[in-house]
Picture 1 (spheres, each protein chain N blue to C red):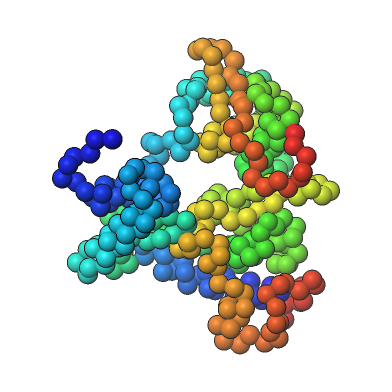
Picture 2 (picture 1 turned 45 degrees about the vertical axis):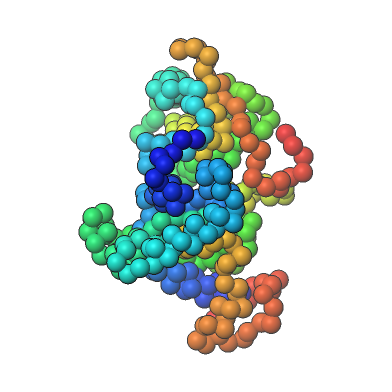
Length: 197
Length: 147
């Protein structure tokens, strides 16, 4: 492909990241910048990250959801919100709890979620699917073939995870919790759910 | 057990707060997500759906049923249907769907599947029958037997 002689691969990479609506994976960048090896792409990304790291720049290069994307710096948020005319809508506590359950126990069915949460989750689940944070993975091969839910790529983007392995383990979360009484030694959920206090 | 997820939710909340300060380029609705050309115009799809709706029974105001409409479920049902038979005619996808709201949910589900590139729609020539065919296998091999 012909590219203007004075625009180096760094400039091209920046342009690609600017127009991309979703994070660009290393493989995809390598493919687009034909002629650049994986190692060269990595070096370009580090270069760009350093350039954006300077305090006068308004953007940052973030590694999220299996790729790289340009985002505005948190310091710029008040002005971006002014431009957009709105603040981002945050998830309700019920939605966050259901989402956490799905994230750690996926693939999981609605009855299984309800058994743990002890409440109906139809409305919350609908919201999460509509916001594309939760997706339908398929159906469980059992009576009634209930739908199996799991987290989506948008989920990773929303919380800034590179991939699912970046989720804090439940053990880590327990350690952070101020008054985590009755700790269990393993990460595995206990077979029987105990009554919430 | 649930307590742990409550704590996990708190962690998620903190992450959400941090991430909500970072803005990325919004998705441009003018650019279709699916790769490849759209083989049928959107207006042709809407015309076909209008024909489906005309055949549907009239909505009666007296009858209020607490029916839960779930586009996601309709999407799964459509993919299940296409697992059995693909390609299938546009009209055939609406067979057995009786209420107007369910017809609309099914159509929305179909549009979403098209947008995500999970199914494709083809029309040989303007005015002819639209056929829908699936482009991918379902996400997880939840059941070992393919359709």
